[in-house]
Amino acid sequence: MFGYAGRILHVDLASGRHWTEDLDEGLTRKHLGSRGLGAHVLFRDLAAGTDPSSAENLLIFMTGPMVGTAVPGSGRSAVITKSPATGFYGEAFSGGRFWHTLKYAGYDGLVVRGAAEGPVMLVISDGEVEVADAHHLWGKTVLETEHQIQAERGGEYRVAVIGPGGEKGVLYAGVFNDTDRAAARCGVGTVMGQKKLKAVAVRGTQGVKVWDGPRLLALLAEMSRKARTDPLGKAFARAGTSGSVVTLDKMGILPSYNWRQGTFEHAARITGDNLLETVIEKKRACMACTLGCTSVANVPHTPYGRINPAYGGPEYESVSGLGSQLAITDPVAVTMANQLCNAYGIDTISTGSAIAFLMEAFEKGLVAEREIGFPVPWGDAHAVMRLIPMIGRREGIGDFLALGTKRMAERLGPEAAEMAVHVKGLEVAMHEPRGKAGLMLSYAASPRGATHMETLHDTAFMRENAAPDLGLTKPLDRFELSAEKARYIVTSENWRSAVNSLCLCSFLVRDAAAEPNVVEIVGMAAATTGWDVTLPEMMEIGERNWNLARAFSCREGVRRSDDALPPRFTRPLPTGATEGKAIEPAAFNQALDHYYRLRGWTADGVPSAERLRRLGLDEAAVALAGAAG
Image (cartoon, rainbow, N blue to C red):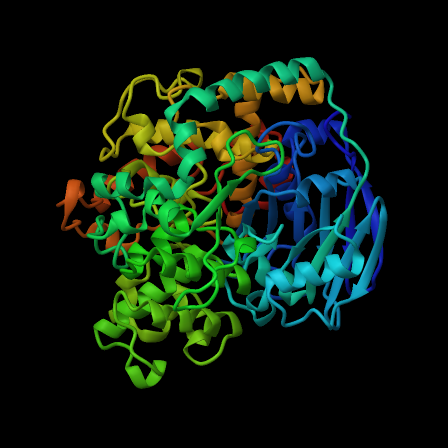
């Protein structure tokens, strides 16, 4: 097959045994890769009801067909598991060179089974596999671990690791590769820690063959032209995603003070332009990328310690989660908080949400200073710098924060329930649905919880011809919840699911751009694989893989009651362009009904056997036969 190494590596850490599984071409075309193949293996090989904290849980690293090619953004791939944070389908994406190297080593994916008795690391070199002792790495930060492995094994090794947060079982620990690339959500690093797997080090020298190189290069040239000339591409290249802070503040959708406001009075201090002036030393790019949107921060001396250029700089989610959500106004403090999360290997979205919850609980007297050890008022950067290492080591109040907001609220009682803003136990990403109402449908129905990476956002729907190739041509109000909005969400979810299976960087997809790369991406899929892939086939693949992930979550117990609207979003926002806006539960439930019908799901949110069989998911249809009845 073109675009694929043709093999998945399986490793059982309990026995030390490893073996390979050859990819079947029909199955591969059916799912493409990354999300699709990973969800297939998870559904196929993980028994229903498996405890996500047990050794039986699977940890799956899965690439796509363009990984290892010259396609910009093709280094993005997925880590997939049963989430310990939610108990349902778990998935997190990262970019970087690690994924290319896994492909060059001869594998499209890696499936880790069982748990070792003590700390180990996997060393993979062009088909040779070693389960090596890693006691000397246990307890080290992400950067320390990567540097130690490369010093011992060689700088050509690309490394994916966990930090102390994953070792200690923080429920939102991530898997970090290439130092600052984070597969951060759903607790994938927590599962890696439970398996006592400190790191995966990979070296590869094999190439990736594509079907039609000249056609692929021609399509890349067109995409590069768009990126160079489009204002969105220029903005990302200049300031990265953090450049959107002021724009979102003006729209009234910058999450602040634990979702109590959609504006932040000091937004200009933490936006990308000010970060460029104060902490960002330079920009860098992922392999083969034409944008180079990644920031490199470097401040040798700050009140909080050294800002290390190896750990990169904060992107939008981190700036909001560790900035406006906590009322932190100092760009140096926001950057340092981001780097501490990277060092300890924990998700910045959930970390910021947990600390914001604690600050509000402290403000309301639900948690006393004596329980924390020090005061945690809004805007106290020094308190945040103390809390993040405590979370990463699960020490003191950090043990409480490591649970995530859902469990934190359960510990504090009913009075704290509204303060925990999550779906299915996964903290909401830093995009305010009271100003992007359709996004709430995707937050709710997502197999993995409140993630913003599954659909085009409502701001893209505001213009005519948002994505004409997808049939999204009518401008819609961003505050609207309707049958038409549900159709837009379902359509764009199917598209994004296909892209997440290829798997490509979302900036390459250009969902918010005037010229989305729909035609080019379909053409690249065909030029890479040699299959006569069409847009309708891509959309069906996306729908298939979305339903497979949802079917896994439904097999593990997800129902309509889990597709819940967080109570805080039913409260009107008090300031800015969204002042007075809230999500009405009745309108949300009606839109969710439309969404379920479009998806072919039951009124309880379970994919019907008819829809699953139509998509070629017979195994899932059998597994859900009782639930969907």
